[in-house]
Length: 584
Image 1 (cartoon, one colour):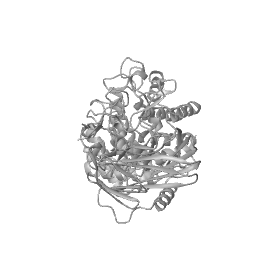
Image 2 (cartoon, one colour):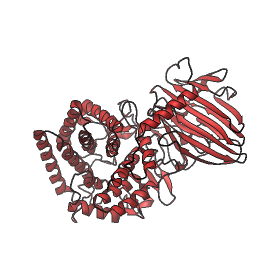
Image 3 (cartoon, helix red, strand yellow):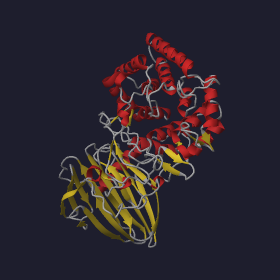
Image 4 (tube, helix red, strand yellow):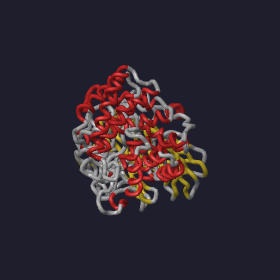
């Protein structure tokens, strides 16, 4: 079991906006302002953590100045290579961090390069891995020259550059004091693998050059986007979360609370079909094919394998999401630690419609082959069989006749029909018409707008998708009335919310949902309100920290990020919005 000492966490907790992210497509690491890697799972996103201080564990890998300092930092242009910069009382020091890119699914390589820029630097370095969510200490620790090797549960470790370190606490922790003169630099390379490491260790210079070169070629110029630098940053995040299997995890973290002590803590280190489709659609909007192709391939394979039993989420290796369970860890303040997700047991109708939207956009870019078309047919058949069933909906609540789910499959059927042979297109349009007619009968409010569900007259941000994705026309009275009511009932001071939980003020129930802010911008742009759309885009785009990483929610009163990070669907909608506003 985990051994949580009475001394508390090994490093301080910080507001989420002060953390940065490293990612290589197979796993990610969260870096704090003191140079602390406080979260990392290995070898893949959904495996057990080896550094878990972010959620209350003892596992950490830190490179921190010993002198008093103020911190800052930034990414290399359009990459997941992060540089912390510390201005100390003695001078200025940088620590450049990356996961070697592209990542190997079996071996993680953590690159850290410290440099004294102005004046001498004095740093303390600690390597304290704790495998399987803090349950497994480092063992079999050996040093040969400048290289340490060890085991951590089922993982094999090799640390280069720490030859002068001392083994502490019965060999479970390595510590090092490092002094650099102005202009000097020092490299650390940590390799973590689920199988024995090759004899030759990773050379720092070679790994840095390869990672820098690969990131430069991986992120397109995005000249057709507003706030181009931020759009490229969001694209880099999506690439960093996308595995070689094509699957893109919804977030790199687990259990970061959406609201303190509210019990809303979830594990998002899995591939949500809906989020994958959002990312593919955003990639197409900016004219990029690699992310689009990755989404199409992953969704196609899942549909052909599972048909109308398609799960809302999978691991990056296409395995079922494990059932939810609690960890024996203190948690990020205000939260409790959870791994796994209850979504594995849900039926979500709208994901079939999102898949068809993805396939339709890919077809317009001539990116669909016969197998992809077969998957589109499977999705359409699933809709035909299951559209009358209650489902959990986009917000994963209780099973009901959610209006958004039905409208989403209508839009998907119409979109794919526009690219299909005549006979098939006619069948799909006919099905879309039947679903829309039934939904209009059950889910239209007395004042002519869409309501949340057949038995719920309230409005919901998800209903804005109907006009954005073509379920109904932009100038349809139902679209116009829904947008007007949403803006009146569920937005405050330029911030958007999902739905009203109860009679409390919106900000008392949950944070502003950043996905919804970008949806408002898209809906306003489509209705011809360009200035208002750009205002919403800019307001929502600013709801992040210096690393430009978006979480799921934004606490408007305290100006704090809330929930897991980085939230992939927010970055996807940011990217799509920046492209669509630029072209109008």
